Image (cartoon, rainbow, N blue to C red; front, side, top):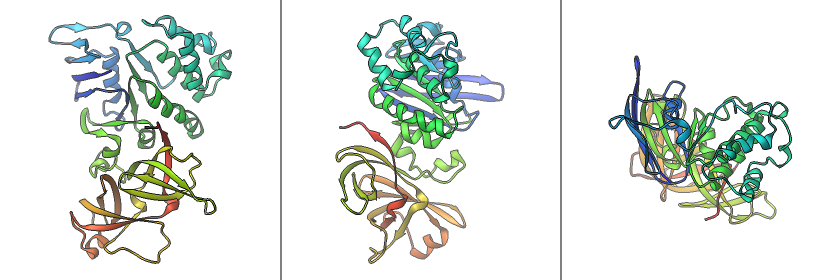
Length: 365
């Protein structure tokens, strides 16, 4: 499964000019502020937008080539598209909404596959209900199922959580996480929320004013010190791929292993061997030039400073490497100067256990 996009399109004083290639299944997030060009990109992939210049290939099949005057109609592209507002058929119950996509599929899923998808999305108890009786999160899950049963070669999600409140987002995020783990096709997920992106995405493409500003694996992009330049906020921090190695029997703590060391965290409630994504906020990382002793923090990790980015006279962002794993610390400019911090220096990252947040399960390797 792969797809390639290289398009240019002018909107008066705004020009969309992007080029990228994805060669494996998984979720690629298009991230950026409103007006960055995210929806225009997926509209071009779906055939809703006809770019002035460029080409698009889905699994080696050309669906757009402006030089060769090729433009494949949207209905023939085998693209699943889920919009913000779900767009279910109000006169059909959930099962018939799902079957709408299935009936139009080039390769119809078997009944076993339909049942598996229904279970994957937690729709078993909703099949006879009409859309008006569903919550926003339930409608979003039905829209996902309908798109997947159309047997697409690529799935496009245009801010599927944007219209939901916090509780409804919490309801559907676990299903999106499972989707990324189990559905073996490329998924493009449009969002302006880094929290969402960090939970579901494998790769991130950051758009700014119609251009690609950053691109790469989720674990690398979120620790790039230039990311705040495009988000207008503080650093996201680090996202770790960790494994539960043991649980304390009495202290209410768990030990997570990652490439570079171990973290002691509040009990995560997963079985030993489970893989997790773990967030460590930049603001929750302190630095010491000598290994501290007799302090309350459970996590003291030897790290190497790879980059220092002064942000203002008051603070600096510092990228660290704990083995191969990147971390980020945000400390004051005064502390940076007082400690004489420099790239290449060995220091110690101090992380309080209570500040570490397990975000999402990952598939077993």
